[in-house]
Image 1 (cartoon, rainbow, N blue to C red):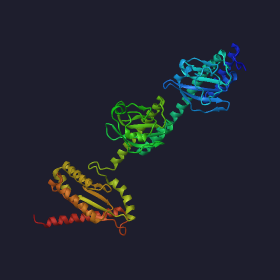
Image 2 (image 1 turned 90 degrees about the horizontal axis):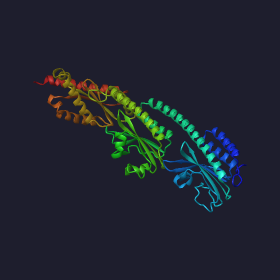
Image 3 (image 1 turned 180 degrees about the vertical axis):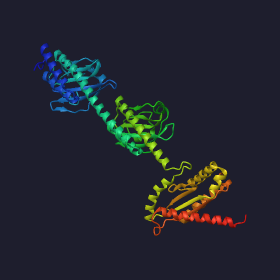
Image 4 (image 1 turned 30 degrees about the horizontal axis):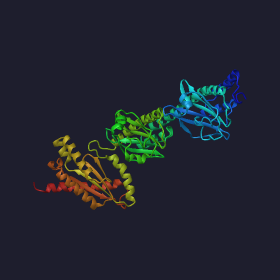
Length: 505
């Protein structure tokens, strides 16, 4: 083949025909791996090569990475990188030929299969539109195998290869962005269709792991409006963070994420002063990125992504995280609004206590537990002569009375129990795992609080109560239990009135 003899000997016409063939072949190839293979195939048609590689160069990191390597054993995947400044071809942007490595050991790295019998080497930079794309290199075990004409031929191939590689990367990037856009659109639809906060968080975590291809992802939410203390609300991936882990976003982090609402990229988590010591044991080594979750103009949290290995998150990675964060922010706000509206529908607006609808939902679980043998007592409260106070002192004072009594009920109640405003001036407590004796102690404590309350005591407010313990032999539903307690309460009320009438004034 032309150019395979020592010193080349390829005519200008033959060289032009070779380059034309190379150009046609590479122009028809749009997959980067296929382009690398085609560059190798076309090069060894015209140049002697027992070893060959293609490297790509990242100027921002001064890092060249071998993306294609072939030798006598065939094409193999390798993981070899080297500094571009250590390569004379990349640093000078000029092709170079080494006639005998025994006399000149300064040849650029030739990959993991470089051996002592390698004698000649040839390499050329790939440059497109002034940008250094990478380099092509070939070597053989025969000294003085390459001449200046071979060098010119390889440089011509490298010039065409640079265009082909750039085109392939452009097509792949467009395909990746289209697929990514479709995926993000699908994620957006899923997020928009969910009103459950936990489901939203799980969808966000899954989206980050799928789209950005990292080892871990987390959603940190801020409890306070200032947004300076964040806690892990959800996490996933191989390096998932424990839920509840806190991060005090002070200094630079607060300024960047909370105030400026800009992303933060950390190339080395282990060495960065931005990462507090108590987080490093969970974050392990590697790199991380964080973007703010902005809700209502404020920073409601942070969406983070982490990689076990050191990497530089690209502008595209950051842009994807920001798009996901924007969708997550809207979904979280919708979920919070839904939760708030649901809470309002289950809450009495005057007293802040659960309402009758919430009571009905609670009773369904309580009656099932009571039938299994768990004791439960219902206590019904009615403010004595409330209508009189309301009519004579006014509705504002009447509302103050209701709120004050509701606060006492709420503060006296155990967390596992439920207190509700049943209607008007009537309230109900559901006492789980309690009997009548325990319920009576509860009522006594409440009466003591009413007697010293700064709003209720001066008005002489008192309450009538009725209680009933669930009895599966006589009661079928919780309504039966409430009815029994209500009956006892009205009996106590009637006795109080009768006693009041019989007592001389």
